Length: 341
Image 1: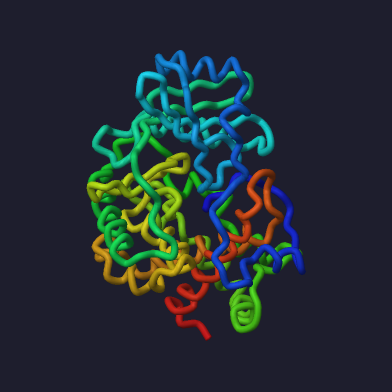
Image 2: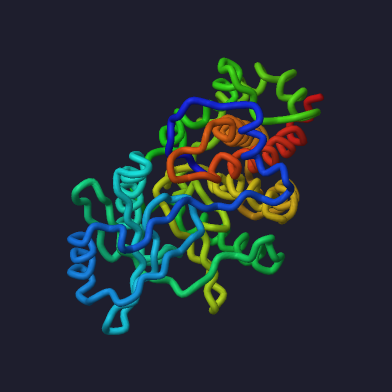
């Protein structure tokens, strides 16, 4: 999960309490606002753009946005999906919605993503109206047949979005500040939320990890449009066997395997196979340079562990635990790839 806060770190018992140590994966869930939390004049603006009256709004609980996410049913039988957020509780969330609106508006109709119907920005609120996809998120823990369907869709996604049909920043530019986790951990007061052998290993190799992390930008360079935040809660499976990818604010240019690598720690955390078992045999990784993969994995691991050591941002109570859990899985994969003792 990408981050939307820049808060100072925390440590100790609170961090352990948030880390998912009870054995269950932390949920991908923010504090959703109900549809009627949107100011009345903005709800009227939504109806005006949809050309009909909203008679039902069903909040969708999964996902990290601390705003409105609801399926709308209209008086004439039409449907739409609304995402809306204001300056509270998280002042950075409107900017993320604006970025998503820009990408969604530019995605080709062939992309496996909901079409943007309209968007507007008023009184500090950002509202997106999207095509309502009749689908469901993958089962948790992962079911192998659904995982195989998603992994096949990742192949199709990389093929259809290379070269990128949308003007977006390169991954190295998009995540220049975020992917400095090992360097921040090395210079900061807090550790990465690890215990036992993992903590000892990270401590022994702190300088090498920071150096490896620095190489991630060139290693990720490519011309594929990457979603850059693939997880189960950003996927919808439809009855006809298709996979729709939602929530595109972090889209960037990267190598074809960037999305696969970033997704696999969450897959393992949520009951799927170990990352290496999938990555090493996946078509998008067939031509991947091994050193480049390890450098990007180091950056992703440092990001998850460092962000997972911070207090939860406003409206996102489970985000840090979710990131830390992914970081622990990614670290095991990184230890395997480096072979460092």
